[in-house]
Length: 224
Length: 248
Image (cartoon, rainbow over the protein chains, first blue to last red):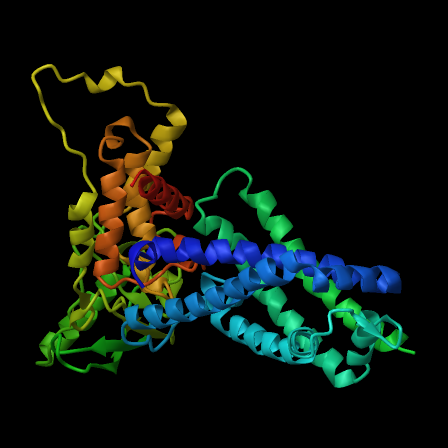
């Protein structure tokens, strides 16, 4: 790693920028998924639009994957560098006296999210890539109708998957509870708006993952 | 009060070191923490043992010399004080107290509880100053108006005594609160503008070269800082750094 990313502040800023990107993507992902609760056809049409649009598939998707990989790799690099910077471990360290558990354990909530992303890819993304890029079927159709809503419902029939996704979103919530405002601080934004932003960040960190859990439970219960 | 002390003992920089238990009796609650250690050392000297080495100087909270990680916190359990301002009334009779040196790869232990914090001096030398070039027609400092809010913030940043509690308490051993305070105290004043870009770039480069970790914004440093230096200073340093980088 050379140039700009060789400095500790540049690494912070790059983590923050990739975090902003991923938080925006999460919001967009949620906005699409929540339509499945209200309208089968709307969800199908949006999914088909996203799945067949060349700009999404060939420009935004690679950028997204780069963003995800970058955030994880940089997170691991920071963790390794920070471990090296530490001296001998304290015999007694009262971390709870001065910081939150989530802020001290971002690497663990991040690892839980990484495991979830791998599972999520196996569940949804790899089959999509297989259908489109290997089988060459870009129609989005199955038995004469758009297949996305039914595939989504099928996935959430087993309770274990609903439980697994719910646990993963709890970890995502914990990660965001620190990560949202940490990203702003890293970008140098600590001013009169910080308290308001902290409140907004807390709501974002709770409501978005809770919304994803709701969607998984909704489809589990309404599957026909 | 009677206390059990678990103290880190290490003969020299190369020694492995270990925690050793000591008993002290009849400690007055009015004693400062360092006076309690003085009592222990008197005991050790009288019994022919090596006294515990620890840093101290002014003993009034302004020099930044005293350190110690007490019961898992830099400068002990009380807020916005240094170890020399910590009193034994903060503890109870029969307590066991853990006393350890500040830990960080960039703060190697020299002996017992004494650590080498000269890495901070080198960061300061890299840019924590202003050059006052006298040309014969130097402007009077009072002719430069400074907004009260800026002057107050600069003063708040300048109260950093460089004790290293921020590094000791940070899970990443990051020195960003210290460097942020030193950058801020000049960034807020007109006298600091001339060398602003070089200052932040050089101080951050030196901080990284010394082997301090990367800040992850846990905020522990702000809580444990004996002078109440806030995270705003780290944010300001980040802004100054981005500004300096964009200028090339």
